[in-house]
Image (cartoon, rainbow, N blue to C red; front, top):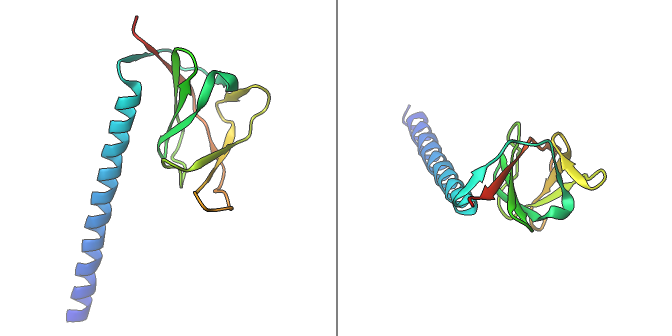
Length: 133
């Protein structure tokens, strides 16, 4: 009886630590997103962005990617569903067809030091954020 109570207590402690870690990661992601967006204003979402108009992705969390601008517009992509393994410092392997990345285009995630990419994930709509004039 005592052993099962001890195992249950250890399990609950693990859940608490895990939920605290997830809350910390979510808070960090929100801070990074707020910092990147700054005082920019959101525009109407679009289906595609040009590959050449961006300096590459900044991964915020498992469902938010920012494409940093070469010009004035920063692009935010909110995935339709979370992408397992997508987190800061992972590499995106994007299937580009033509000169644009579009909603529903597929990509995979590669962890640092790994050679096996994740399952496929899909982009959502791209929301432009521009600096207030």
